Image 1 (cartoon, rainbow, N blue to C red):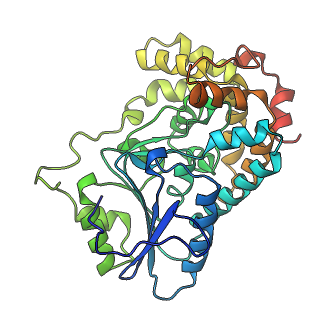
Image 2 (cartoon, one colour):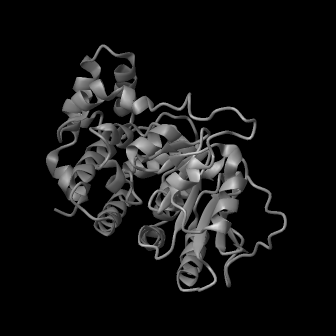
Length: 360
């Protein structure tokens, strides 16, 4: 993280310090500030972001907004799903619905922001962290980036309009990321269309300096000034895309609309990477995998706003499905990593169950 000691950081008016803000010349700086939770987005965080981003959208002195995360581990580990699970189990479903409504309103605002919105996507960028970054106009990843939409692991689905981006990724690479929940590196994030440029993690100060000089700089222009790292070594030689190298089996296996068929194709491939992917898909919530695939295919013809509207319908459905509470329990509460899903396999999830998630 760059040296920002000279800046005055403050919470949004009427909000807590879950997100802090500063004015840095022509830049509005927003910093997710829950480092012990890898800046997971709780209700207070999304309320604060919505308030301040709306305010800066019309404030003349702010020419661009820059988002980053406190601490060394990453931008954001996602939404605070433990709190959402607690609300659902306590019967406070409206509390959970209100969280998703506000979170998705922030994502929609980021996607349509009237000024440059620069996301520093260093380290862990997962779930809700993708929503507040990957819809921005300038999206910078680094060699430290680990980006994922891991929701099928917890009996949920890839939300925050992440499917809008994954549905437009090359071939079936987006399908692989959506169904497995596996993290990818910075180069893969660029190739997926979830980021614009790969830059050295040591260069945040240089990026901010360039933006102070010209807040309208696009990602490629910023990256072109950062061809070497702080040590003077060439950057980018070892940052090739893993996903693109695996397109042969990825495109062949993940085509179509039937999750059970996809899993069988993966199991039938000789590549160890395909076998690993099969193991991941099989371990996820069968309900989540089947619904996520359907949602991904629908998202291909939708706008960001339409995908977010679909996400809200799906989130409310998933809140009432037993796999969500069970998945969060296994992954984040008891941490036994032994979820007991409602269905034994994706082949057991019926078409009617999938359509019910969409209210049809």
